[in-house]
Image 1 (cartoon, one colour):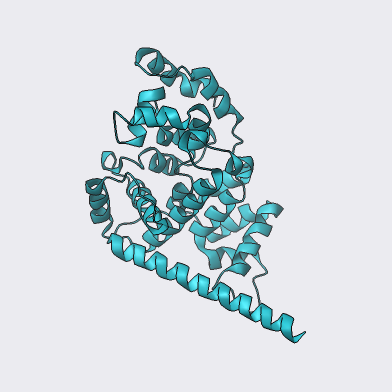
Image 2 (tube, rainbow, N blue to C red):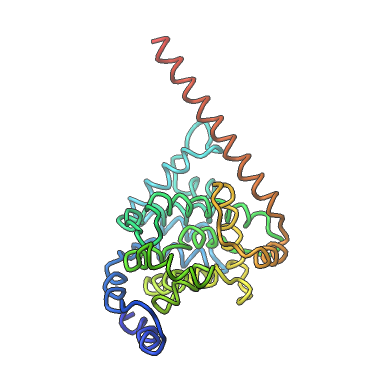
Length: 303
């Protein structure tokens, strides 16, 4: 798909709208410079998003990529549920991790230079953005298991990539631009649209469509700040996961309370229960890490 054609509508809109920044060409150049996800990861995402996906099909895709195989085996053997004898086969790995985690690990391991991009426009560094993304993905995995409606495993990856558009827009905007725009509106996405004619949610969805990532993931990201405008449960999951991840981190967000309540109700979930479950899991992990560190110190003392 031709990137110029994908963005052509927005170029026309920029010319029509009273936007404050003339950044069309720069934005197009930056979007072209973002490294696409590898072919194997795209195949994996397409398979997992399919209604008739099979373990055999996923295993075959993973086995075709030695680097991906190694990353998944490493993840499986570091998991809390890994057997004492270790995980040695791709079949074991896929069953142990589950489809949602398999795709999430595959995408995370393929981000490359994307995850190192600095985001001056949002006054945050890349580490903070991707730490939030990882936590959102984790919350989405919990929601997928607990939701009262059917949600596909690819929603975990949608949560992981929900702020991908900031990688592009963050290099065009600066913090002063957004602060100035948000003097007029509270909503971040509206401020982005006022400045350049589109927001980070739309930008991220467009990038994924360029990479031929399944539409269910792209649409979840496109509507993750306005889930009430779509009937896609995945958008509601990403919206809730985003809000819960910020709350667990203790960082204020611009989540709309009414929109959040509607999304939670549609999923049949309680926000406080989600926050408690994630915090409990984090505490358990810290306890395991402390125990491992203590055991290592004892070994070093005894030797």
